[in-house]
Structures are given as structure tokens and as C-alpha cells.
Image 1 (tube, helix red, strand yellow):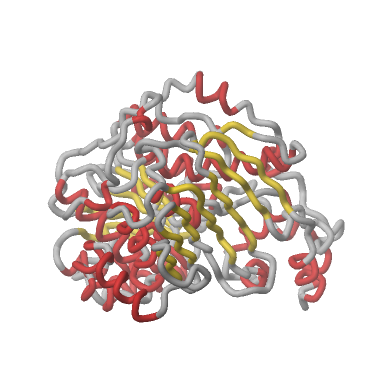
Image 2: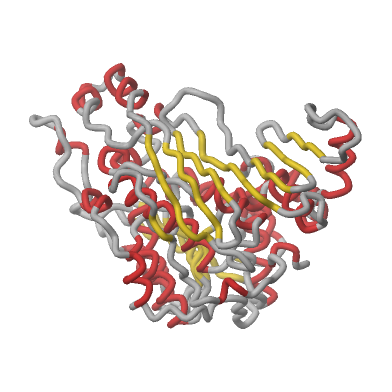
Length: 467
């Protein structure tokens, strides 16, 4: 969804540069600790449970790549009468028609259709508690926070795609609104529900890793072709960030699962970070080599370095290495490395080392031994939903379905959600703070407590609760 004043590529014509945009403020130093101190955040949405909703009425805004996938992941839940898609909205007619076609294959009723092409605020029509219970947001990043806060103010629960927001002020406003309205607002981080990550999490719970010391995680995904593509990201909205910001724009895929491993906000917390970006080379090369003269004209305007590396310390002294690279031509990877006194895991491909002091100290487990651990420690949720996962593997191997299943069924039962507003806010605010650290010469930046001290209470992660 786009505002009228949103940065458009047509501004490149003639001068060959973008006009000044709101993104330019991303590098302005943030007095984040002062903002949190004056925010009035009280941590009241920890373990919050609202009244059960027998059939969740879902509105979806943003029907592009992610919105379409989320609709598909509701198929089984709709057919089993756990939810209903009651409204859909997008700025492109073709996306609306595609969504209508797919919904008609598994839902008997037709959702209300809202075309936002001529009215940037048309999506607000969904935010009516007489129409919907839950708003799913799958729009460009700049809309996530304003849509979430507005929907909560109108009485709806919210689930937004990642990140929750990319500016610290917006993230804090989302938290404050959730606390004031007592509406759920979560960031739907699908990687927290992947089979490999849940397997590692269950081994942590069962003591296989012993005391945790260090983790490495990342979002490494060559997006150059998609960033340049005229239609994949509508009006190339995602490319705009790379022309105006430098830091880690996509912290949550790697950081989310690691925070679950380390009980972040449930006994430990992130303390501070230092972030550093490499020079930029790969994306500008791709722009120069494009057959689009508009892209050629901005090849020297890329601000984001090719590889951003962020080091994070936790309150309990653990360390986390977080990377971001969507410029370099290399295979997809989230690293998913976890070190403990009893074991080490390294992802992509998944490898496991058990420190028994009686074998080969320099080799990962062989295939047979690895499979034994996988069968023994597979997360019970993944095992329970194996049949449904198999039917929904187009959702990133099944993790998208598991994520939506847990969200909808938690709302059905009226229990606290697996992830809360503070989880999504923390993982997102790290991104804003990497921008700050890079802009200030890779200086240390403190990560504020956004829970009013509630993180200090140790608790088992809700993802282990049966539904």
C-alpha cells in the first residue's frame, strides 16, 4: 500500500536521483533509551489472553507475494471452520482477482473486496469489529506500524509481516497501543516455526545443549533480481530502502529463533550491540548491468553495504552474531548456529555435534546418529501437524502453515499467543539500532528494556503449549 507522497521511481527521470524521502531520517541519531523511559510501557501484554473466538474473521491487507501465501495457509483452517476470510484489500486489481480466485477454491463465502488503487486509506474499511476480528498485514514495511496501531484502536487483533516497523518511535507506538487497547499485536515470524529451528529448540529444552554460550544467525538471500524487477515489489518499494539506509533491514528471520533458544524476554534479554557494514559493490553492479536505463541512472546511489554484521550481547553474557546480505550472489542461508557446553548445531545444511569426549572431536554426527536425534527430539507440535504440513509445504516447507495454525487456534481457544508484541518489537528494534550504530561509526548502542522488567521472569516458551 502506498501514500501519495511515497517515493516513486519517476522521480529519477531527468536528474537521475531520488527525491528526498522519509527514509533519510533513518540515520538520524535516536535517543532510544529516553524514548522508552518516557513511553509509559508497562509490560502488561505478557501472557495476555483475550476472550475465545469460535471462528476468527480475518481481513487481509496486501495481496502480493506474502499476502497470497498467507491466504493459502488459511485453507485448512477455513475448511475446518476455525476461521473465515471476510475482507481483502490491495492497490492492484490483478492481486485482488488472484486472491478471490484462490479463496473461492476453499471458502464458500466471498470476502468483501476493497480496492485501494484510488484511495490510500481504503484499507481502513476492514478495521471494523462488526466485520473482522483479526487484521493480517502483508504490505510494504512503511505501512506496518500505522496499520497495526489503527486496527488495534478500532478493536481488532493484528498480525503483521516482518518487520513490525523499522523506526524505533513507530515500534514503541505499536507497543503502547497494544497495551492501551488490550489487543494482540504480533509479528508473524515464520522461521520460528520451521522444523529445523523447532528441533533445535526442543533439544535446548531437553538439556542436550547444556549451558548456551553463543549463536550465529542471518538473512542471506540474493534478492538483486527481485529488487530490480518492475513488479515483484510494487514500484520497487524495497529497493528504496537500499538507497537510503545502511544497516540490517531484516533482522527477524535469524534473530527470532535464536531469541527463543536463549529465552530472550523469558529470563534473559538483549543488552547492547555493535553493527558494521561492508562496502557496497554487488547491487550497484546489478543496477549498472540492468537493461533498464532508470536502474542504470541510480547505480551509484546505493547506500546499504553488501554485508552487515552485528554483534549482540545478552544480559546473561551470551553472544549473538547476526548478519544481513541480500546483495551477494550466494545460496540462501540463515546460519542457525547454536553453541552450548553439551552440543553445537549449525544449519544449512543442518549438522549436529554432541560433546561426549569419547569420539571424533572433529566431525559432525554421521547421518544415522543425526536421524536418531531428529526422531527423538523433533518438536511435538511439528510431529502432531505432520499430515497438514505435508499438504501445505508450499508455505516455505510447511512453517507458514504451522505459524498460521498456532495463531488462529490460540485465538479460538482464548489463550496467550506464542509470540507477543514485545517479541516482535524487540527483534524489529534491533534493526533500527543497527542503522544507528553504522551511522555513528560502528559505535556500541544499548538495547533498551521494552518490557518494564517483565523479561526477568523465567518461563517456558509458549510454543510448547498444546492446542
